[in-house]
Length: 332
Image: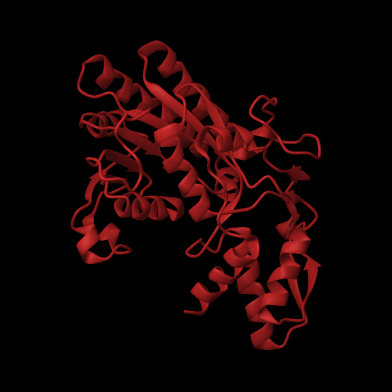
């Protein structure tokens, strides 16, 4: 087993120590909660490292989580994080917004690619020194596949990134694999396709659509502005995505890459239709040229056969359930 032969999520075995980078991000919060619920020890690597950054956890849970400062642009910071005795590292920290990466592609490469290289190098050096032998789960993105055929992509498909974000994620994968080959650092790459859920920030498409629909309902407007609604996307619940990461920690094979995807596509136009139906709204989309993005991928759906066969993972949440949970969370 990648971590140890005795660990089973939720089982009555000694807890493992997991370092989660980007622990205060959208996905990181869900992963930390899940690991704690399974009885494991979590070190939350957060830029700034303040204990107050765990305000999203109940006080009794936050008190048991160690926070450390991690700056991916600083080698010494990465070495300090890797100096601990660790069982696993889930590397989530990144410039995660395609919009932010487009605004400063160099910064995206510095954090996503070079930052992953620094962290992996530090972990590989710790392994060589006999301090620890952690499993590194590098969280990449399904966007690395870029434009391609209108059917699900699998891990053997050519990588054709067409955004600074996706390109920097390819760089992160390459960097981690190079360190793994040279040092023996046990490394798995996860390529999650789009995932959504309660607490997701308003810069992302689904929370943004919800806000615009609700604004229109409040003001009586009959239209909302949107970008391109024709692309087809594979959309999972963030809780299912996190479950896949946990499954890979126990059942994934070092050296392998795994798509994390539902395996079904939905056009963004149909997604908008589901939201308006759930909200009881009567609004029509109106394309705003300012919201259009050059290089939009028409069809991006993932084949997660390898993940399912290796771990037994399967999505537990329907898209409608996830959308309703997001609406309920925003209403609160």
